Every structure is written in C-alpha cells, then in structure tokens.
Length: 165
Image 1: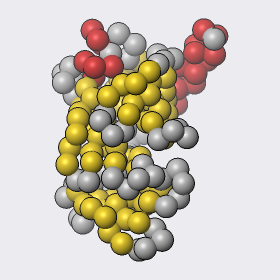
Image 2: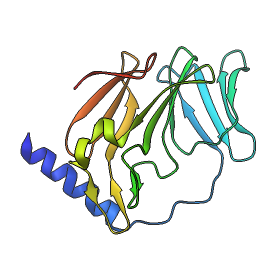
Image 3: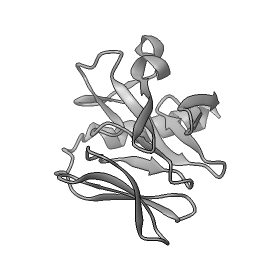
Image 4: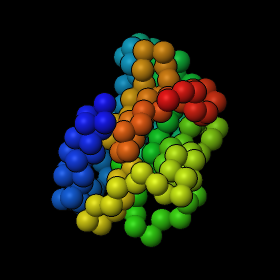
C-alpha cells in the first residue's frame, strides 16, 4: 500500500510540476452519479442545479464554480476553490478546500486546517501546494476525496462531515 501511495504522490507531483495556468472561466457541467441531476456553472450567470428529466431548475448559487460534485437527490452540491487541487503558496490555515451546499445554502466549509493539521501532507509544486488527487461521489452518495498524502476521506454531503477514512 505504501508503494502505491508513493507512486500516486510522485505521479501527482510530476503532473503539478508544470503548474500550467488554468483556462479562462467557462461553462462547467457536473452530472450526479445516476445522471438525473445536472449542475451547470456559468461565469456571468452563476450556478444552477437542474432536474434533467423535468428540465427544471431546482435552485441556484450566484457564483461560478470551476469544480463541483452534485448529489443524486438534487439538494446537495460540493464545490472547491478555483485552483481545484492546488493551493496558493501564501495560503492561511483557514483556506477553504471544500464547500458543502444544501439547496443554495452553505452547510459547511472544510479548510486546510481540517484536513492537513500543521500543513503536514501537502506537497509543494513549482508555484503552489497540491492537496488532492481526485474527488467524486461514491455509490452511497458520499463525497470521496483522495488526498495527495495517500489518505482517502469520505464525507456525508448532507451535513458536510467526515464519515470515515
């Protein structure tokens, strides 16, 4: 397991070393695991969560988000900062990595301090710190986050709390 974690971190760091600038803000779409719910985020219009079958907007956020996961229930959305898996070098421990939403109302922010106490486990790239490898919703509707240090965390999207590692 340690060898896999080392390889994964080395691979992620290799990718991040390039630190390519992000593309300009553009429309982003995220589908729920069952395909019934869609979140669409547009730079000037904000984010809307829609029921795909009914073609109905369920709720909105005024902000644009580059990266997000939407739950099958259409009530819950998780967003992350514009840099996605990269954190600016001058960050503070209260820098928000994940924001959990319920029907347009913020439930909880998860910060660097919450996931990396003492900043242990973050990986320095050329111009940032890398914090995660991947993020998705699992078959049980929990947010699964694969951290750069090899840990995998699961969060209950309904309350934004860590449920198990």
